Length: 202
Image 1 (tube, rainbow, N blue to C red):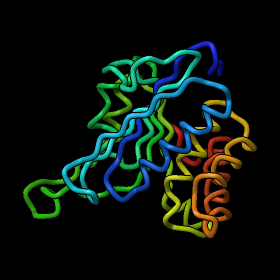
Image 2 (cartoon, rainbow, N blue to C red):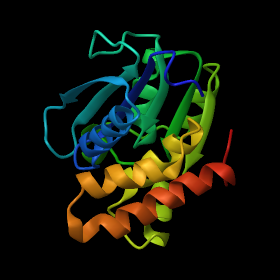
Image 3 (cartoon, helix red, strand yellow):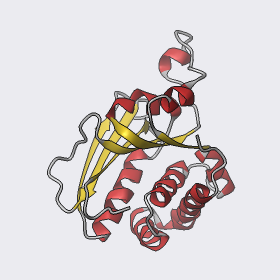
């Protein structure tokens, strides 16, 4: 993918506590290492843990605005299925959704005031998108760190966009705590390789 000539818009969505902001920072730092102009904007939900969190990442030769306009995101990187559906209006026609199959119930569902939809992926598919749906939590467990779901998804994004691993490994080493570097790189690699041999690809 020609990431230099064209501005790329990546919307990262999920709920608090999933490491979304760290993921956005790593993606932005990787783009900076490629010599690109980068803008990152973070929007937090009402609650630090459990509320919606959205990060806008834009990079290219010259980027002016830090936020992505509706209908222009090239990729939605979704840490939770329902959050992916909630933000689909930001995706351009023919864009890509990389979505974690994990379900995190919102408050109305938890208190019995609503039900979690059973057809989220099917609804996303109807919107003329390319979908990569993976169980990032299980992949993180296989990598030895259940908390590294965010790195699994970043790895999947890097592979889908045609990037090489080495630069991303360097960024992870520079960004995460030293004690978790190895686990995060393993999770990244698992997500990267999953794209080459996906278990679920709609």
